[in-house]
Length: 257
Image (cartoon, rainbow, N blue to C red; front, side, top):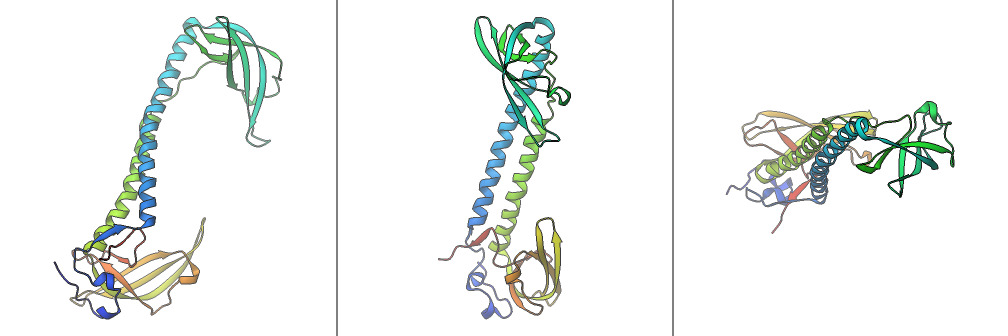
C-alpha cells in the first residue's frame, strides 16, 4: 500500500489521497456503456446466426427455383410504399393458392414497374412445391445473398464492444493506481463538428522528479469550460507519465469507505 504525496495535496480531492490501489467502481455512465457493449456482443452473435441462415436459405431457393418451381394464379392485396416520392420503393403483397392452401407473399418491385400493379389485379406467382411459403411474382426470382455479412457484422460489433470495454478499463487502471497531482490549463481551442461545438482543453503539470508533461481533453459544455491558468486535479500513469486524465473521470469513480 502506498499513500500519495503529491504536491499541494491539500488542494486535491480527498478521494485521490487514499492509499493505492484505490477501491474503484463503475460510474452510472460506465455501467450504461457496459450495457451497450453487452448488447453489441449479443447483436453480433445474433447477426452471425441470422445472416448465415438467410444466405443459406437464399442459396437453397435459387437452386430449387431452377428445378421445381410451379406457377399459380394470385391477386395483389396491398401495395406498400417506402422512402420519399423521388426514390420510393413499392412492395406488392399478394395471395395465391398452393396445395389447396391460401398463402401470402411479398415482392419488392423494380422502380420501373411501380405503376404496373394495382390492388386487386391478377398476377402470376412462382412458388416452390417443397416450400410453398417461398414465392415470387412472375418476372422475379430468388437471388443469392453473400455470406460475408455473417462474419463482418459480429466482427464489427465485437471490435466496437472491445473498444468500449478498453476505455472503461483504462480509466479503471488509472484511477486505481495513478498518481494524483494538480495541472494548469494552458490553452483552450474552440472546435466545431457535425455534432456541434466543443472545446479542447490543454494543460500541463510536473512529475515528482520535476519533468513537465502536457495533456489535453475534449470538453463539451460551454458553461463549465475552464479558463486559462485554472488549476484542476488529474491522474497520471506512474510507469508512463505521458498518460494522464482529468479527474473526475467519466466512467469510473472511487469507492469511498
